[in-house]
Length: 220
Image (cartoon, rainbow, N blue to C red):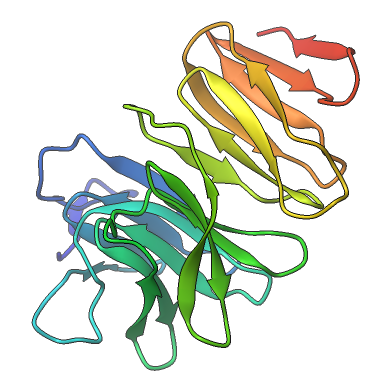
């Protein structure tokens, strides 16, 4: 995917596919990664690199990339239609992890504050067994027809978005399960280390403390 120059200060690139899936992730090194249904693109400041699945076992596991995260060590992980990969920037190799389920379609991947790595499908939350290199079933999930997203950036829990509800799944004994109903379809959310939830639904940004009745809304 060679970039084309347009004007004096714009760079555009033609991305194949139907355009239904496009997400941008910025990494600490300043690169911009694009998650698409036709592979993974990265802009290094000068050019776009395009990663696609090929016959090479070191290539990305699928062209359909649903989620991505940068872990505490700066490593890049992707959730794809066929599993979870970790990208090694030095060698350019994608390492593939075994999924302990017949369904390998992963929706998202995230790292908790203790360094544990989690992934989700439509049906299960998985936790990585690092010694074995296997994502094992950790907790069943509600079945959802919408895209499922999660955030593990909080002590003792993983948050999962089910289209119009956000659910907290405890991963240890530091908190209890809970759910927060959205007013409308959830456009995006994230959690901070203190446990507060930032929820965007229906054009409004809400700050919710799950263990307190206090809720703050930030006006548009």
